[in-house]
Length: 163
Length: 107
Image (cartoon, rainbow over all chains, first blue to last red; front, side):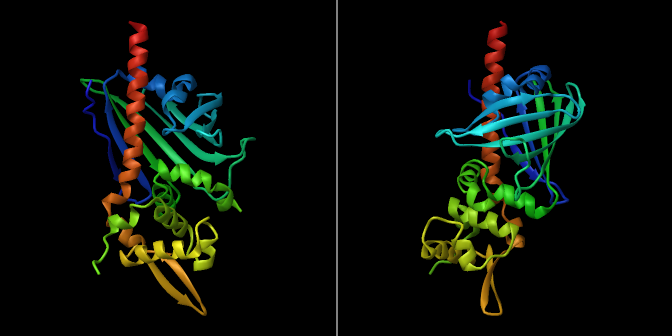
């Protein structure tokens, strides 16, 4: 089936947040599961050709998701997500950072604060993802990485960046 | 010579990486070149292009030149967000695939 859903992006007036919205032709409870269950997240979360591999997941308020973004050559980057408030089936907040394999935050990269909202529509679900940063410069750093190519590249250069 | 536009400036991954580095701090040509495997000349050529399209400014401080990111110029550009939007678009398409598989399994 041809996919007609459009992904929209805008910058919040503060300059420190990006808002991404997208309609999905599936009910909220299914979309919620895909965002909160490790087995499903691992299937779609990483930008290709990367894969997300969960080490541990505790989707509760104060719980953590610890996973590795693994590249085609087996190289990778650990990511740590701290869950904030959870309103089941509706929204949750989280803070995500790059980490080392022991789950310690990697220096030199911004904290990213998430607020993810899921709203039922006539045809499925509207997803609203708000990503905020401590400063506009940090937001620009993340966007500047281009995240797909840039994210891959940044990982390739991670050792140099952290040196 | 034709003046370059901002879109050309950000079209190259190395140049986006330079912008990302300069977003963190102003850097001297040497400090910047050390972050890349390519030659100093190659990095300098990229900076030249970024300067021409107004994304990077060069300021003298004593004997050193520092490259600065011109954030005002970046804010003018919707195109700046496009690679990021595309990344999310791909991600959501994968999510739809996962949800379709989930639905088919349950039927």
